[in-house]
Image 1 (cartoon, one colour):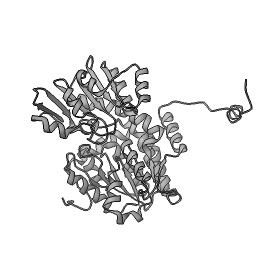
Image 2 (cartoon, one colour):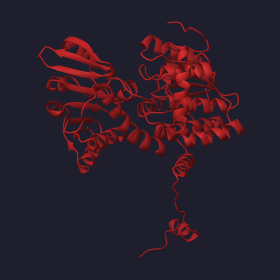
Image 3 (cartoon, helix red, strand yellow):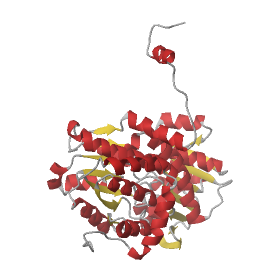
Image 4 (spheres, rainbow, N blue to C red):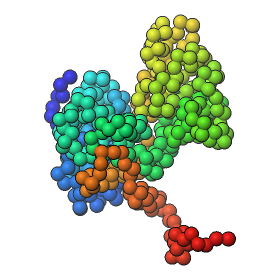
Length: 423
């Protein structure tokens, strides 16, 4: 597929007005990012920096892109998921903000990678990724661009896992900051953001009553914890499936029933996967599913449900509602998959609330600024967000919420730093 223009490729530029309203509405809920924007407009810390981004093209991401541009950067943006783009937002960024955006909701795989390569064609000096597809494409097919890249950031758990594997193999060519691992990102974005938005996506797609329904949450990491707690809050009977005994024990201590995926398949009416791994609902689980079971995914890639096997054993398949596909099986039962197994919160809804993305994207903005200043001093490894950035964002968020905290006295600081005081 060829890109229609060098400036952008969006579904309908006439949607720009609605997109601008959506961007402004999200911005009202992002006070930490607004504060960074005020400083960036004055200091211009990113002057002359070319940024290539592969992120979910949502109203919240648009606010981040505008902040980076106002900080002096030129930015090109592609979608990090074929179903997560908000077409009106993409149109507004292209038509009203002058940002090169290459994203269409529902784009096929070839278009998805053509858009990533359109971003790479701008020869970015800093990359911003959500899932590491841009970084992987850069390292495998566009290696001639690597000498010009100073550093990068990564937004999500799946991407950080891939990047750490690259670093361990010695193939990562430049330093990358794991924004996902910042406390103000993974605790709030993954737990509270995905916890709420995954439920939102499921409800928009299905209009189910969750109260009294048996729901299996597969994975009890930060995302799984959030989904499980929100499902229980909606009145669901929640089962948890895990492979990690520590996380499984935590789930049990939190009051959830921990069981195997096959046992859960016999009982649960709704599944939500949140592992970041492949085929966690595989052949054995699919064979045990009860009639009418609904499968949704909240992990980054559409690998968590074995859709190839499900398609192979289906006698018929039809879309019964938007983002709701029913597979009729040879055994007479049916299985329903939401959003083609892709991120249900972004495909069937609007993703995380802006108030949560405020902290995630504040981390992104400040991590990019950090790289612009310090990248030459860093080795090609995966780095944490500096603690002082994390704490600054937390303090700004508390202030925006009208909350205050205490400070230690000099006596307390000395006590905390001493080993001599005892019983």
